[in-house]
Length: 538
Image 1 (cartoon, rainbow, N blue to C red):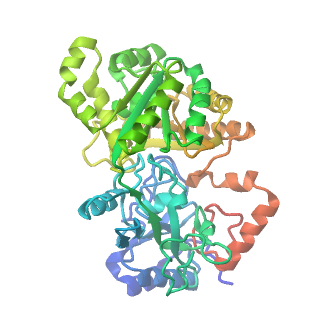
Image 2 (image 1 turned 45 degrees about the vertical axis):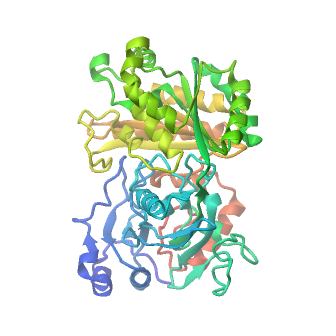
């Protein structure tokens, strides 16, 4: 078996790659940007390969096997907060962003196939150009982020199709030895339902390539959401942090019974403020973390509460009206404010925002900067408004062409899951708030009902990487927070490149042993993403 080189000399392999895919498609370590990240990383990107098609990817893998060099596949490399384009361990980055084709769009059944380089914006524009009969599900990340990459990490968005891995029908995967396999019914080349029936025939393989390093996924087919007759967003807020537990318990049956079919996102005051503006240095006199009186003053000015929720209703006007009545009945005594907003209401709010401020004193124009993009995300339109929050503690102005890696924004995501019960939500958020505050960071959090029975708490550790010592402090905060949440029974749903050891540390031995056996079966030379969601590296 070929062994991965430990001395990191990849010069011979680079020559071979240059001959195979062209010299311009091979960037050496001094010219590639894969070492950029939103937190400190010890892993090195030894080079960067940018093949243009599947044959090029196959040749890259074959050469990697021949020379014993590890490669780390990325889609667009914008995995901000989880490692960006940095390998889990020292490796050559296999950049698949040039594989950016959209194919096999079914305008009747609403399915589409995408390659790794297809961005949210590209798919959104494609669907609009084809009549807008179907919506994609958008995440709060950049419009330039990969649809495929988010799906492989089991990401989620906002609509009833928010569970991205749950909308996966089939995959196209290159194994380390160059074999191209298709999951589901895809390997039956005459199967008419290959793009419609995810289970396939016999054992299903798709799950093996989600959050794994068993192969290189070069394409997926996914379901799209039919454009509804009518859409209406719902917004609500509560005054006190402790009210989150009863709020979750009231919302849970609405989600379970299908009254609300979209993902429900509930962000705390810190998360809302960071989505509207950068850190208020003048108001705090430069003090960090953000003092509570300053946060509350902004809450009064812009009309947000301790927790602020959003979701959406879809269907006919009659169906939406019935769901709206149920929500009003359930939430009337639980929330401070409850608002329903469709496209017409939003247009009116934009038109009369100045008179509204004169009458109420509330800064509606600033809130609309957040409400409008969230409103549109629930209709499948991506936005860069949310990713602007990564500049929260930067003292530079937010640039037009945002790049958190390039601009040394500090961001680490910590995302843990629990059953959708109020006391679990409160315990998770209490732990998160205490740890982040003690480490000197604002505890920005969003609770998301990602399906009918599971709740995710996404915590953002935001800072400025240009401030000496902040990287180390943020990583220490993440380590303590993760340890405490796991000790309480709340495990992460995904990991950053710096935290893959948690799988080995907490995983069951039989499970880890089986992962190791599968890795050796699919990738005997251990060349694909060593250390990534892995039980063993050699």
